[in-house]
Length: 311
Image (tube, rainbow, N blue to C red; front, side, top):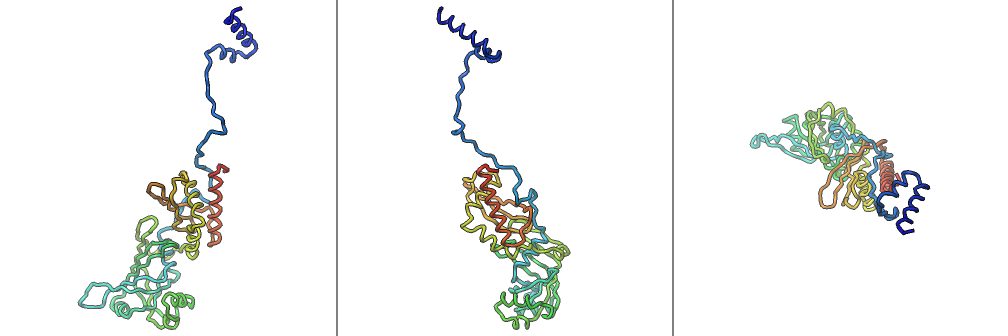
């Protein structure tokens, strides 16, 4: 029997034993396939779309009125603008740095340190007041301009706690502060500039009066210092990369800009230039600095687990 005949016999025997589909494959021309061992194959993991445990799908932020009240709450000193009481400089304004406290409606109470400002207000019962929130805390860098009517008031309407606050801000004794001429500035027009969003707006005075400041404002500076500190630099960058769906190696820096009861603002810079700010909402708002730190520690851990493909 020739070799070709032998091959036909073997194929016929296999065809009788194998299923019909396989027999057809044997009769066809052989197909050569290359296989890569599974252990050597590298697959880029896609960003997880699963909900984050402590983050909301809605990135809510403070209203303009709430932001304005937050700026007022974190400041203890601002610039008072009054119309100069001098005939040869008609229309000129006079600026003086004044410490202040605010009441429940957002009106400002000042023990005036400038005699010229007192004289100016005696001739004109209106004034402006400008404040800018300190960098590194709540509403950092945001500013507020108030156009106010001015009323005389008694120091008896100022609490001991507020007098102590003004004493610390001015370096004067509470007795010296209490002895100053007191005025109340009642906002009639309110203008705010948001440093994070780079926007400005006029806020209705009624909304300003009714709004409440960010309750995390007193703890914001310490919270930002801790989270942006050297200890958490890499963890914050990893979270930013995982949350935004960016390769970690492409994130050059991440900075927590601000935290409030609704969420936080995060600036993310990428290798090669360019940065963006994203707003991220809380599922449950932290009540204080300790709870705020705890939330971020959990976010850092969750980002690590997502990066490893465990979630």
